[in-house]
Length: 265
Image 1: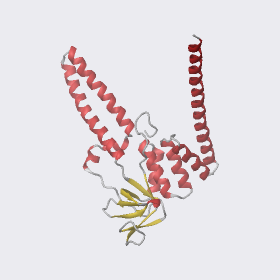
Image 2: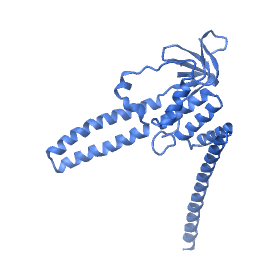
Image 3: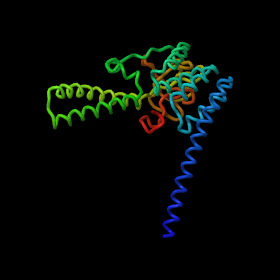
């Protein structure tokens, strides 16, 4: 009996101290976020950036942290890093008015303004650009529950109204499923990257001695194809392609979970 009492006390103590540790970590996250915000308000932009970067690298990333990072880099005239983080923020909160205004303002300063063409699927599913993956997921989940709920009702009570309602939700279910699948594909196959240096040479091969094909400048968005020994093979919307040193460019997409339960949602 005494043995079970000791085990119970030990189990309760583990739960108690685990909760205490989690609370301490939460408070530490909030304190760091507050200090970074305070540093930004006081004009210490590099200190603010360091704080936000630490939060993002330790799993506390969200749209507002990337937005603040973009603002900090923009104040330090680092256009490439600003656009990189604005784009990351836009994946998570695509309808934020302040973010979209600042992103447009930063894009206006890019020396290599290259328009991204819109494909048929992007035009047909035009609403996806204004929704995050998490929002599409939950929207499809709600439609899914309602659709199968209506079908369940029809098993026990058939009437004209639930017949037409089931047809409506069938259409919504198909659109929602297609939207979720396309949004998932867009997020996980997003090969966009941003040029971070003031000017870079795009070469014909992954060697500094190869022929210079053309030059790109800070903030330009390119598409990453593959990597090789510290080099990126990239292409532009106008079909130009070539090799650039990996340190001069960074991909927009981050790897963490993008659905509820993950930090990149």
